[in-house]
Image (cartoon, rainbow, N blue to C red; front, side):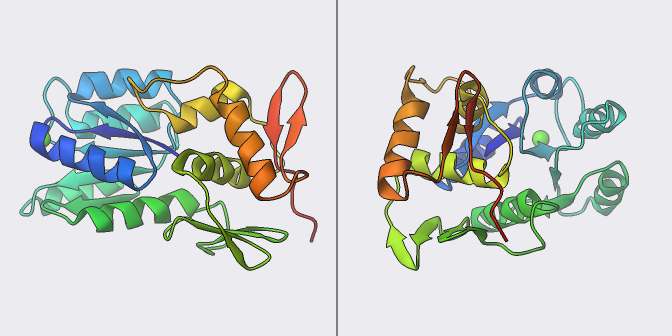
Length: 221
Ligand code: CA
């Protein structure tokens, strides 16, 4: 899951970025509104954490531009404690949720998970597929009720494939979900993660679509 963080406060941005990475998100950090807008035009994000008070272009302008361009990416805005009108204007401009500074990183992580599952499953926080269950909050996976140990990246690959069950994802699309700006990508990393997942879970779970990418088929009901 790849998140764009738009925050000009260095200390706060550093903390949020570290907290989200620890929770398994790939994070790109833009430090002003213009940089945020550019990132949004060029990359497919799963969610955006958007400060409203930003240099060059305000968070509200970024948000309005995003919705005007019919980009429906979930947006969580960060606002100051006394800025109730900002919060209302933000929600009216198409934000999906907000947090008031200072906030708890655990709450930010949980709210992002809630945003990410909206519209993808009927409110069930667990992702299920046959014998497989993935818990995004606990970051745990089980197969036929037995816990399976996965690395952070293996977990991320599995989660993205499950959220897109029935769709083929290219290696480049998977890499985009796994790595933030400046993180080094090993050329065959995705193949290796898929190989490990097949070994640890089931050889049949993830299909290779030759020349295109990987998919988990829709679960049979
Ligand atoms: Ca700010």
